[in-house]
Image (cartoon, rainbow, N blue to C red; front, top):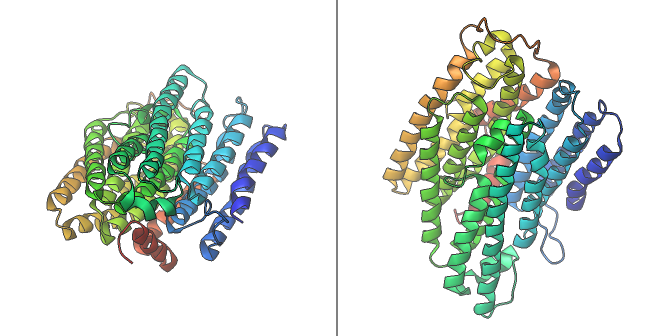
Length: 478
């Protein structure tokens, strides 16, 4: 079943290449996404045994990321049908193929227990996202694509050196050479400390650049700003979670070895720096998609802070926030794409009164803004409150205080951009684009927003159990 869920999107990509009709091809996306999501839930419920050599196994951490990605991709696939109806002038063959190949690669990231194979899958996501960012085919999108490729490729190359150093630390220590996660965790106390620490530094920088932790985030504002909202949703809710999972795999090895405090401290520092960067650059941001890019920097920082704190409560909150952030970002980016088409602009100098021009998308964008800034009763409020509680429970009152200050500043900065764009009257000089909300471009967002609201009111027992198991894998207790 694991191989079926990983190869199903590849079969869909091949079919997308063969389908000649530009109008019918987008329907292939939900046709693949729905069975993929059903298989994901089945695998989470049944937990198939590991492959003979242990390279493939779906543990609690992988399950959380797999379900989040699959749900988000399914929502985006239905949205894509409506979106591509407005982009009839562009051939969508490459877009449909790249989306499905990326889904396959993201799935492989979640099910592999071998760090080398994980690296290959993560690099595949980097390559397949490039043509998606360039979909609009203009000067700004090609600049964003090259910046994305350059920075992420350098980052992933640094991560590869980190894997080499980690493997070499087993040789120096006289252990069997391996990149299998279970073996590395078992041998972690005996690995050569110098090479082990060097490996952790390179892996943190490499996977951190893929996540977009500051100051390694410089590709995000351009890539998120120029990519279609559909692609931005998958970047912020899908690829970020895959990179975070890769970092968690390294964290599992780190906490099993002596000197884990230095790795935790580095994560904590980069997380706080990311939140600080977001607080500064989100203020008076006039481009709504670039604003969402800095919001992504903030939230990867929140997850890094939580993991750096360690402890059962903070780790539970980190994993819950990974789910909440991924789903909420999906609503924000898809709604921002609708607003962009309705006004023909991403600038708040043009966008005013979105609730009047496109009431459903405007309302969903406003609701998602409240959710992502940690307002009750939405899911991110619960996860952020859990993380802050974990900070104070662990005695890190300074970290908890800084966390709350950054959240407050970011709320004010984001509100100064979102509220004028959504409320008020439509400017008389605003371009009459003729775009209006449709079932295809609104209903998927409404479903996703309902899930985000549900997670703020009630976290299902199976999800709570997965979160506890995931926290335990990270050293957060049973």
